[in-house]
Length: 265
Image 1: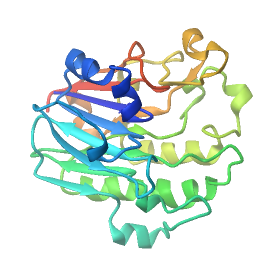
Image 2: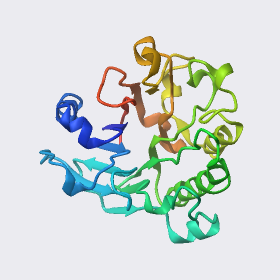
Image 3: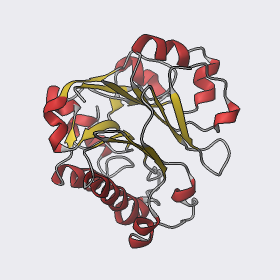
């Protein structure tokens, strides 16, 4: 089974560039998880009859949003985090809005596993959303994945808006303490690892140079001056089933590129 995750940074823009359908045709994922769709289903024309589509769009038009396209119809699909977890972690609106109305999470339940896609809130340049990330969002999302894991193994993927280690960005020293590379954000990611979740790319590839996002400035993508902030993680019981994990850096259309795993599921 092939699972691909991609922050498209506006699905309408990628479709308009004639890059979306050709991407799906070439890579042919069994499950495709999208983040930052910035659209509702009715705002786009997508001719992919082999897939069932599930969308979780933000209340705010043209903002955030996630989607899952799957060849196998899931047993169940859940949009957003459970109310019990939202309440437990006090995950409510801040000065930027309510993350619970921004279409940031979809979970699809299949026979033997869950697939969860997530678009993690950005900490902002002035780090004003760090409290939300550190104290509310990251622990709430982890709690949700652990809750699902009690039922069956979890594969979660998406734009986590953090470079975990110094190997996950081209210029770590210059970016220590800045958005995406603060101790709080990195700790939030490490908590997933400490709870047993496996960063699939690191099963197969060590070291730096493996990036998924590049700034539009200074020809960063061509020079591969980037960050790895898009991930696919799996429950420990699935680690041995993952046969390949890749970054599809050649795929254009967004400032992010897709990431994929191939697994015996």
